[in-house]
Image (cartoon, rainbow, N blue to C red; front, side, top):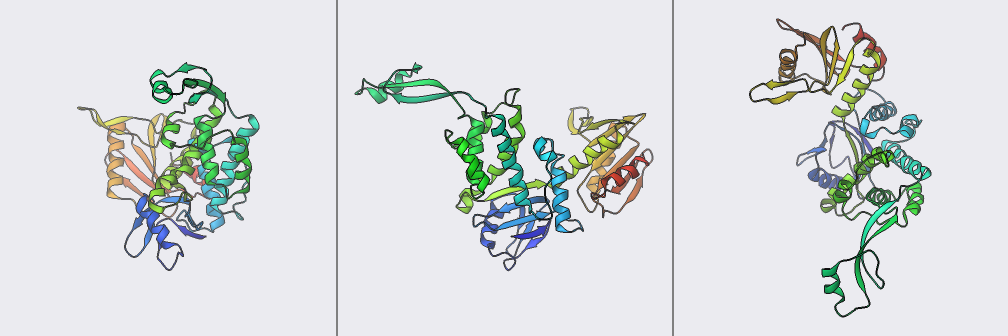
Length: 370
């Protein structure tokens, strides 16, 4: 296994499986590729190549690897689509475990919890050529198949069981993780379930309602685990595993969660609310600041996982100020950004770094400025 940071370059001498990594980089969106090296983008997590070699990618921050792993886990816990009660309550040994072990432990724990609570059963439509009649006769197919076999019936019927799209996809994910002892044990509970033959079709067939609400987050993790299958035509095997998270989204969710915690007593906190459009006629180019504080005057907080503010960023802040009616904007970035205040005639933008390892202190400092 090798551990790198965001934006770090990997050269052939650094990685014993560089050809596999290059093929992976060509197939996906997670790396920049040149003829001399492969460079990570702004994703953190882990890649397990077909050979089993792992590449762990951590945030580009000045801290030991174990602290960065712990930070990644805490940030993922604030992602609505991936937060699960067992995961939220779990104590994970980030000093001893790498991200691959942490993520897989989280996922297998979720599946085990589903099993303990009872796998859902439902009616599934089947088509089969039987020696006895049941359900509905499919006339055209029956004539084609059984013209010379009058003793058989090609029928459609409903069968009650656990072979549903959710379980087919979970079984496929467990098969992908079958190197893990717990994954092999969990597979025994899915003996009567076929592995998914078409991920897209099965995911599309899932409708989350009150009867299967407990599956929602598990299916998001399942989708993440199975996403690497899209690379199989490039790398030749189905053992590649991609568990990567966009640091922009992690940072945005992590900061928003703490803003709600520290500011809800003084403000109405709106997260990703559609405010205005850049143009009225025709109505186009929606403006959706990351966070809006309303209580007296309107204050906008925008998060950017960037170590240097660009001209385009400031044009965006200008649009927020003019169209959303905010006189004060806070641009929240990683801790080593250059902190600065930009003033115009009717508004100002303050750039601040957020200490992700002591976010409570950053929130208290910010609270004193608004």
